[in-house]
Length: 450
Picture 1 (spheres, one colour):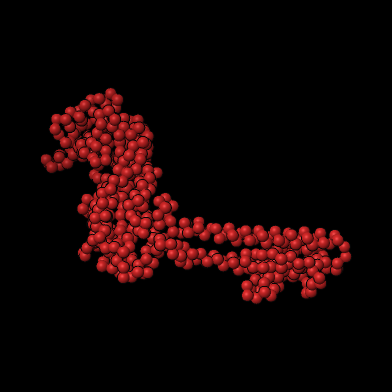
Picture 2: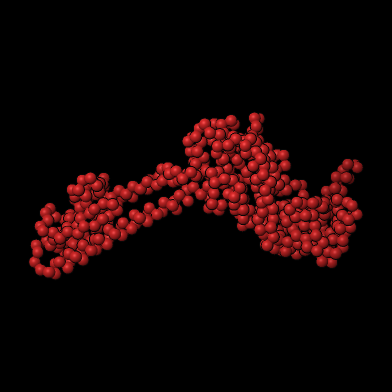
């Protein structure tokens, strides 16, 4: 125990926590520190001894090398023929001495001394157990500090810290940094829900663990972006392998069916492209965005002239485009017997009176035909398919569209049939409010004529 500024003595339990890197090497992470005020932790036992008029003295060995005992706590100056209990707390030897304040008189005293000492031994044993439990918590703290809960890969903090150590440990050794993300990940979340978006991320993480060697440092930056550090290699050596990984099928399951998704990947080399880890990752990010600008679903090595800043300036994604189209927009499966709505933008939801996609899916049971008045359903669908089967890629049709509240709004439906790698034939459809269109266009035409 040490003297405390607030008075009295206290234990200082300082436990260093070490973590392991990917090579199994330990490195210091942090101290956990606990201060226990000595009299208080023995208070129940020592108060009981004092109450029953016994003197006590609690001592411990000064050090492992010095076998002399130093006093920790006592309620008297001198002990006469005390009964002594020896105990161990952690790795230290302790000694409790007890004697009746009035001197030895009868056997009853011995029973009280025994039970008083036993209570203190039990208290100190409990303290020892607490210390051991704190030590076991090291493993859990390591997981929380360095691992991503969803994918079990390193999180950004863990990846950055270990990558920094890997590079600084072998500053002359070449390595390759990789950044990758899921193409149109938001669309997966919008179409299938966030739970299935998580399944796609877990599946991708498992693919990474199976494909890359155990020496590879794998991490998740956040969202759908992942990072990799491949040691002792060059970009040229890893080129074919990274192309192969990019092309390897990646899937997730949704309601018993398997759906595929694609990734984009960029990579850079230390020290050829950058000598600082953070700059190396920015080079990989610049290469990744270059893939995005060229159609996604591919991989590219960093080269001079690429700038990661462009990524922020030209951050167009499908959702940005669909939300800002000058009209309501929808995608649904082009199947005469089993159509399925996949996506609708905000303007369509506003026009039809739906709060969100989930409400649209629930109301229509994800079927496009449930948006058409029952009396006209067969006629409208027949017209659409007649136009498509006659060789036209586009169809145009006018009909009343069912709104969320059960009323109908007349719309002009312009659809195009498209072959999707993931879903087969799908319709991309733009809707316009028929009445508003007639009013606006007729007014403009009259002004021009005038």
